[in-house]
Length: 458
Image 1 (cartoon, rainbow, N blue to C red):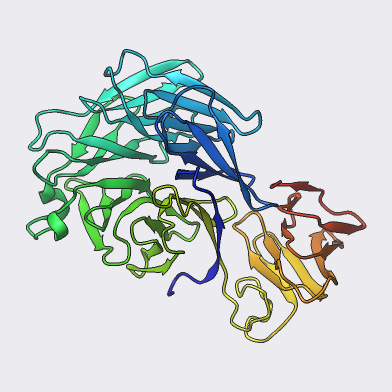
Image 2 (image 1 turned 135 degrees about the vertical axis):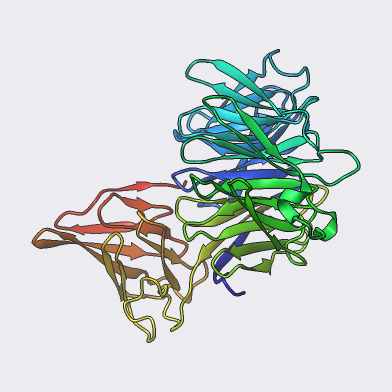
């Protein structure tokens, strides 16, 4: 699978679910929108039991995309005319109707919560526009797409930000007969808005594949001053890199045949770009360093839609299914084990011969498999600053627990913890911050002192 080396797992849903977009919170939990007109609800995975829980709004709504704010709450685009705020702690929804400042039928689709707390959204209205809601001031702003260009403004789709807060968004269907999709940008301080929809910008004098940009969708910004913007066109099966300048430098990459119909994209801590090819049941990754993409298959009929990277470095995707069947969610954890000892090569002290010792240099987490018992263990690196992840298999040869010993530096002495691991355990252990237990039961023996532990899931 090329760049895609790791552990893949899918959780099956049921016919009542229609997962669409997906977001992850700092505690590792996942939340998906249920896409059904008039039946606004969110779906989350109960990690310890592997079952899905659904929470329904008390009002009529049509949810599409969602985004996690810095306070670990969720903002949702309600296509019927509102922004909706959800608290995963209180399990409560609050609707904020888009005011008359906007077109009568605003049809919000894309939503993204900025670091300063403001919530930006695309309006697929007539005329199309971009909106901003500031919860701290309870105020709204509308930004119209400029008229008078060679190609009129089309329908805005998804949003992302530069580090200074500059807003970027994708545009599809700039006219009914052509394929003049592209990008837009807003300066949040001045309100100045610029769009690029001329095919000459993206393809120069070359003939664009499959008719050019028709349905630009997911977008991510990976640089600032000048901005580097990546976006995917689901219909043309193109991944486009747009380097801001005058003129901009544009490079496009063909995603055919394996990643056609990719709507959303996400960027992992290594800079790779992940895509979910809905129609083909593929999850793919594009490596900007090698300028190549690879993919793997999901179960037939799962139709992945939204895709997100968790704070732990996991890749999660929603599975929309087909006509109410095959729904659920999937997860990929990067993992490579050349010597087949169950320890990720990135933290294996002896990656080329079977061993029992691991070390994460970023968090100085040093550990040993003291006793494997009858457990099937996978020990892998989690995204910094989390440390090391330990996963015990569900099916084992016996009931004997494994023992993991972890030692952390503390000045002139060394702090140690002995952790008993049984089947189906899944947890994070790290030095320099609290020990984060993802899934239990896990028993912990401390000597003489060790960071406290707390639940992330369940």
